Length: 106
Image (cartoon, rainbow, N blue to C red; front, top):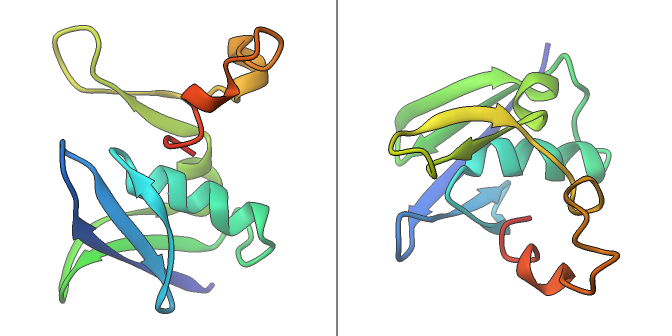
């Protein structure tokens, strides 16, 4: 099994930049989940591979790529919850012309 290392650096408002092999892949408040989706989307990882986030040499969180890709974080209910990731199409945002609202979260 392959382990994909994702390096995190702090950004503003509780978000983190996430990098894979020196390439910045994005910015997210749930970087392990967003990174898993990016790795699968780019054909760099298989669902059974492992993904692990690091801040420096400290391992923060790890999962199977396929499991992480199906999750995101919901902080709207007064707590922090792992919930099923829904694509912009599933949320109905593309039809309404609101796709610009989800680009930063991808």
